[in-house]
Amino acid sequence: MPEVEVNGARLYYQQSGTGPDVVLVHAVTSNQAVWVFSGLVEALATDFRVTTYDLRGHGMSDRPPTGYTSAVMAEDFRQLHAALGLKPAYLVGHSFGGVVSMHAAATAPQCVAGVLLSDSFFPGLKHVEPNFGKMSIWTDLRETFARVGVELGDTVDFARLFRETAALPADRLKQLEDIYGAFGRGWLRQLPKLAETSCGEEVLSEAGLTAEVLAGIAQPVVALYDEFSPFLATSRWLEQHLPCCTAEIIPAAKHLAMLDNTAGFTDAVKRHLKRLSG
Image (cartoon, rainbow, N blue to C red; front, side, top):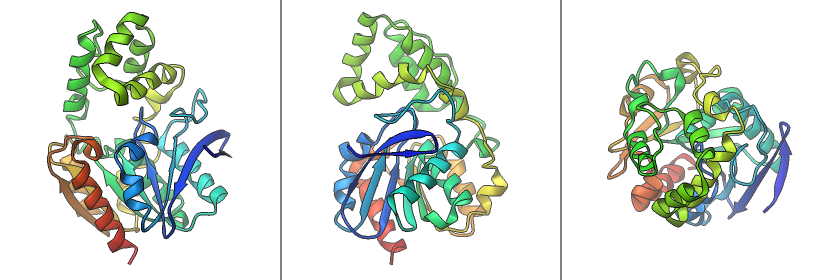
């Protein structure tokens, strides 16, 4: 897998296809494999040049101790964009990947032709989502970890998740791996590594991406939010406040649309990318 040194970190990336540039940006605790596993890369590569990469601290990329805000990762993207010689790209960002994508649209507009968000929560819009800390996907996670004797708390706390996973003895970690299966095993094994970093705290920082900055993003934005998402108020806010935003609901999904409803998510992404790219 090719690599590139940007912003003080070595990032691993892959490219497929030819055409207008599309960059897929994964979520916290994920990596670029999610896009391959869901089939999105293959589906888009017939019409676009698709670039995926592991965010710093994730997958095969370097894991520096700090630098996990959306501002730092937007700069990572800007330098990656330059190093790979990409043209203005359409960014597809899932969850925190959408935050990074929007931050890049705000701070490096010359690199971003448009953004497709997938169920993103923005710390700068936390007043819109007062129940973020009790989102259903955290409840599911908490219940699963409780089966091996780990208490994660009632509200979202990435730092605690990372620390608790790192502290698990081998036998209970194996129990969790068996519960999550083959694909989830790779996700689970990243968590102890992130415990060595400030990622858990920094990803929930506003980092300059305020409501005012978001409302000033001029590029076209597509807000793809899941039917059972905890962030539907954010979707409505984006549609009402951004100058060029289209919102769409992905049915039968609650935060992981690319896996919960692969066909519906892939169709929406392809349809909007073809519309935006002309």
